Length: 391
Image (cartoon, rainbow, N blue to C red):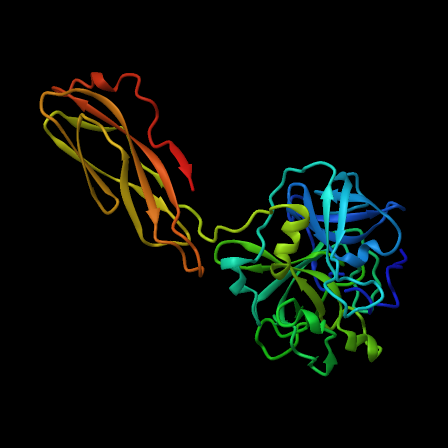
């Protein structure tokens, strides 16, 4: 394969070096850009079912015919080809001037696709885009540090963010080539030959390379893996010094600062909630003899919150509900009988993610009041504990 996009304007494009092949079904929101010769020469990532983002320079050379969605090997028959409806290169991007503006383009698909899409690292997820954060690089690019190793497989590697704001002119003796007008925080530097396991010895180069352009850089957050940036180029210092182009790290365009532009040209994109709602279950029906009381405990699973409160959304005239933490006590009125559905709402106290808001889940509790313990009121009672909604 020959890579011909703006070769004079940019140093060699950073493909995933030092990574592993992605297995079928993994990285479902990562797409390949299919050029008019049928070859995938760039990578991209979905922002919404009908929107993707990639590098602007991918549209400077031969025509891009469409996107390959759901494939981990573009030479196989798997995956779905989707035509392009429209492409927006950032207005400040200039193919002849590396330092003009962000190397990013938004693509509208001709039809929507259905798959898992990871949120942008914006708002309350933005604090995890920081120096030293683990970063996951994904792309269809070449696999060797010297810029060889043509490859059709989607690959993924873990590395680290070295300069989250791209304000350093030099890192480890190499000029970064960060765009001055985008400082601070419009780009970041990640990858290279780093000591990730802490044994004092570099672990070998992890980097992007030719064909990874436009591919995602994800970061881990307490809520989910979030899309922080896309692959743009290698460190300009590596090119200046004649070093391997795909071994010393790369410059990635951060998407958070571009959110307003993205939504202006392409419409809204899903944003993170930063706090998962609790999953609530309860053993039910709660069977109570008239004039007596019984207690049931709600079971709550919530990986990012520890405190929860309970409220009654809709009660019943068969008796009284008393809430004590996650314990629900129902006292049936005397000389009554019947069945009713009570709706309870469990609200968490937010998560450790800055800016997160409390979330809730409603659950049905079926209450059955019996007289004389005959059990006749339980006939036809539906199965208990059905989850109603999450917000």
